[in-house]
Length: 116
Length: 115
Image 1: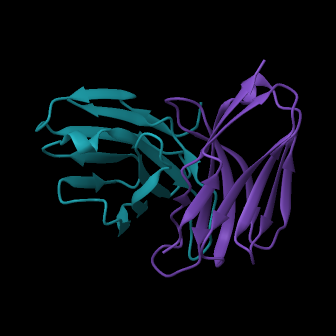
Image 2: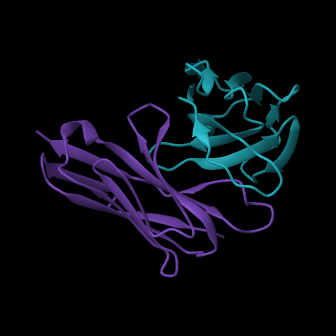
């Protein structure tokens, strides 16, 4: 399977703990996106990378959140000092990219985070 | 700021019925509009993508239309089946500086097709 993969699929953590999620995009895709989806809502954009550069961040991405894509391949999303309001599905997507061209995004299965 | 609204929030129909899901958006300056399917607890599966220059796209029993000037799209599902039960999400990509690459989603329509 050469689609977008995310690990872990489920994470349960206690409030105040740090968590890290990983996303492996489709191999030839140089753009990678993170979205957050709470119950009953559509996904909301968090941040976007082109290669290793983080080009855009949403206001939803508080200072407790950090995302990296060190070699322009996989990406990690870390949440520090988790709060119950962080409970959500975290979705990763990837696409081709170049200049101002817009390409279709392909989504991974998501990581479901539950903060107790 | 782009806002995407989907009506109805939930829909239940008997098997075999044809149905229409609605999506509206406030900013008509879009690159494209995409319909996704999401099964419970799962990621998103892309169903149809309509470029801003197009009026409709078809795939099997699905047909999506786009009226950019009025800020509306519909997803038509013909001869619905229980396997079509899922949440259907509409998303647009807006032409505006700084946000040209993210998708803005509606809250979805939860469809149940009864056998």
